[in-house]
Length: 631
Image (cartoon, rainbow, N blue to C red; front, side, top):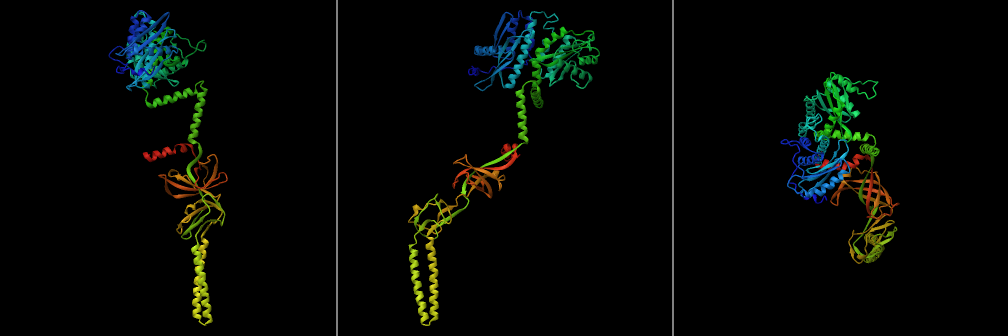
């Protein structure tokens, strides 16, 4: 259903319902009530009036008045009313099951605007629901359809109240035209821009129609009464004694929820069987003995406003007349509340919203809501003042705590390689051998030269030539030195493990037979069971990671098993890793809980300490704002 609706063209935009160049819908409905021959005719014509007032493309009513069923359709604009008939009648049928205002938003596919289906109930004089009026209107947003829904409800309540007087002449005291609020007063109310202006038009119209001394209208504000207008006064002086007495009487009526009448002949004392309204008695005295009355105006079962009347002592009001006035005025209560809400400022709107939430919270019932609010308050306080553990997760890798590099002691051909990376070795174990055959030959030559020098020395001594003997001795010592060098190199030809450990790097099997240069790396050897973590601390958290902090390491190979660690060193200089500045922090890690391997990667969780919850959750966002917005 909702998919087809937006196809309608929205060129027939709803015009303002505050038309000043024609009769207001209230005045038009009043005239219709005068002229209608039957209630059914009046309800049909009133529906057409409502459709015109809202410039609605389509509208309909369905009501049962006695034994007669009223079903009437109306439309405005060039659009085809059949397009909306099925949809609106289904919406109207659904609304009849629940006698209260209903609304449904529809969005146009063209994006030019939104449409809304609105409905409000119609009531019989006794107060029971007899039907509803539904219309289609164009709206901009939720605020506009809320306003129009309240206006529709006000019109429907006025139609309900006016239908009681269909067929009566205008000369009777109970006629529509001569009643409490005539068409002129409602026409003024329809074009008002604020609740005060609305109230001013109502109070002055009532005073003129009823010939009263004073009419005042107040609205319920929290649990107190706020006077919007006093007939004949442009401004309400809230601290004047008369206004204070009037407001107190209004609040007494708000509490009682029933009409209150006091005049000179009334006898209220402690012996009275009925309730005693002392505040109205005080108002009567402040009004120099004039008759006073207050009428509660209800909306949705709650008293929302009070209409207070003051009449001369020689023309006292009667309770019958007060009930007639209440019946006429009460239908405009929704419009009054709407005008009050529409003219609030931002600050007042916020205060009223918070006050309404407060009232709902501490009203009777709603245990679940109260619990939810209390939990929310506790959570907010915990967020503002509580602390929590602040952990920093950083990437890291496992590295040996002690690492020994083994390189070629001299340039030579690689003769053999016995281990590869990953092998465990013991101290003194031969890892690889270099070809020392040439060094062995040099050793033999030097040994032969040593024998020659020794013989020459003996011959020189035998011949009595001490000088020649000293030269031969020096040559022999020189050969001894060369022999020591050659023997040391021959011993270095075997690459042996300096300690028990594991080969972490080195595979020389493919280099056998190739000459390696002096100092070329051959193996890297690490002690087993002694490892460290090299953590890549991001620049934003460099100040948080300090020496002696503890944490846990989880490897990608087995994240369920954790290994504890302690930070022992933090580099003072940043390096670039994966295009980001990081500071390398080293930590001693235990391998008892987790079998570690060199090069293993994972995540290190550093326990920085207790920090405020608000800082833990918000500091990243605040830091971004400080950096980019220069707060």
